[in-house]
Length: 397
Image (cartoon, rainbow, N blue to C red; front, side, top):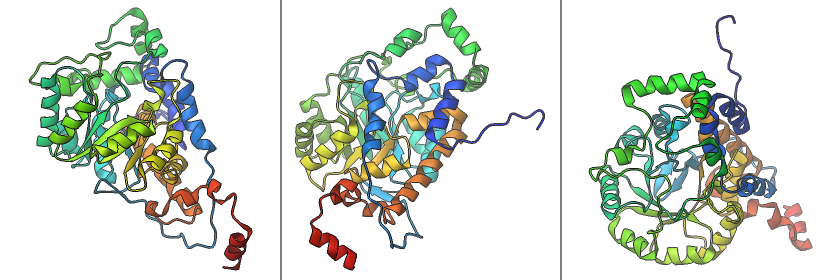
């Protein structure tokens, strides 16, 4: 139609990624899409999940399926939520509001970063209590204590301590683009923004009433602490975790765990859940893929320790595979950001719909009606060496 912009429909997260790459300034897209080192691990994460094979089952009535789940006592509308990510408003203005509204509408956890571009109190209000707060052990004790107190006062039920960023990694794309915070406005950056007018105009329009995107949990702190992107977070040691466990009255999650020995020790401290993640390949580029660590950690901690998973999840099939490999719940990082970058809140909603629909379809093809029925028996590897008599018995059934 003349005079109207025709926006092609999104059919996958990769569609959203490609559109986000076109719409966003290169600096912003690379901040979302980039990783550490030569980005090998970032590429391996989804590839390793793709290598997991599932066993389809037949002659089961799966016409009625329900994706609702439960994690840490919270009933959720889907078996996945949104991972903690800082400065999401760089993907699209109002990103934090959009994610909070989707969390409320779908009854899914939204993990609010310490570096969120909206104050933690406001996010949980918009999310209608579905937000979890993610804590970095950076800056002063005074600032950390204040954040924990603010989260408790704002009725957050879950606190996530991220432990896999003791020091910042080397992210070449950010260095090449001159990405810093606060931003430095050079000729290259100005040209980058001018070449992407839709993002730039939307950001400027939003800034008129709200200010430019900035880490609001710092801006609203009574300690006057400034956000330092490359600050050390190495103070999060075992004694820090023990003190935090004693202080925090709600559920406590430790994020960024890949070593089974670490997982066993974390469990012994009375932590409520372990969040298996390699930070989406944004920290140690030589680390194992997250899906490989998931299986090892599940074996190490046993069946009853709640495990949350992210890193490399790009579709609903990946969600189901992670659950079959031992995850109790899955979080989306880049996939959500690609949706926001592609089409703002509409793009985010579309991505969540796509992933939910595919998860339901894959779940049904496995002969499962709800996520609680998914376990290691859904893995094809569990069926490869069945004794002949077992095969015969199943055929007879």
